Image (tube, rainbow, N blue to C red; front, top):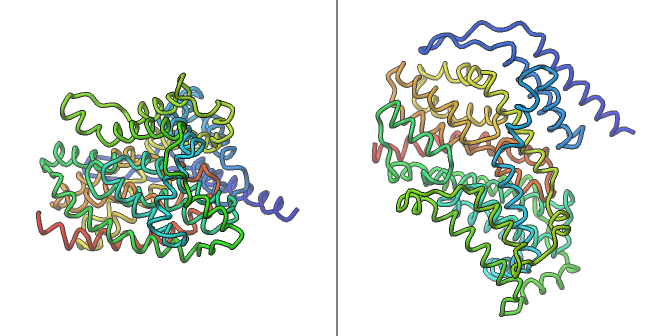
Length: 479
């Protein structure tokens, strides 16, 4: 009964905030070097709906997918776009196909026993100590994400993390070890993705805009001189925050047989493992080798196509490992709904102009500040705006041209503001829906949106200091 009352209050507050924002008078247009940037009536309504959804996500007053679907319904009620267009933004996105593909791949690795074997290798190296396992997964995620897209890395790590937790009997939402390990599956790739230009879609966007709008060619080495130290500075506090907010429990004596089972995997691969290994290896090969393939042949295979091909391969004659009914039970369809609806809402905020208005409002005061404060606040602003955007690349597309124009207006070096902004686009540590990479481990059910925000707020506050330090210390070495 008390829980019902709490949920009712949360829905009431969210509704009041939404109506309050919607009924507010339109602010004066922002004056910028590019002209006046107004917040339209539709943009204000989009922000009202988004705040409503965010409050319900954080309070968990309604099931997360239902809240996301309610957001789509409200976007239609407020007449922000035709209903088919609202739905197609998210459910028509290739990201949805990617999620179905990688979650099927994850299920195949688990069902085949290959995830057990991978897990056994990790256990042999670090021992069955929860804190060491969390650290190992964060490090692996970061190193892999230097060269593979963040979402793909999270998909690779997910089945191994879930296998460990299931073997030792740690249940979803009841284990700090589970919370820390699965959040690590999201955090590690996000942090590692800033090390190289190919680690995150927004990095490529930044390089393109710097070249086209500012005439500045930033090469691979120049990026890494800043990106690698920034990631290495972020990783230790990220690990310490996770294990402090969610102290992993020690493995109980009752779990000893399960631990032994993981460590005592037969040396020879079973037929199902061989099949899964071939599919998995090909997927990783195409994810990792796509830049080289594009350079050599001009052909690029989207990561979504690779994920879909891997999923289909598990059901081909001679390769079948499990049934479709089993795959359905292993896939969290609610997580897919959550990310699809989140993309829809984010695109509505973008298309109504509310995203650009927010960005202009946030970045305009930075031009007159000292370099330290400018970089620090730019990163902090991007982390805050990531609450509203669900794609790193879209965030980069919105923000990077704005900060390059700001640099031109105030006579600043564009690299020292566009670079930090690009790096910060993958620093989505507050809301699960702020990045598709976050939703992959969330789909396993071991942490809630509130859990993610609880740990993420501390890292969000630490990251601006660390990225600022990396730029001010290392960028002058090559720039």
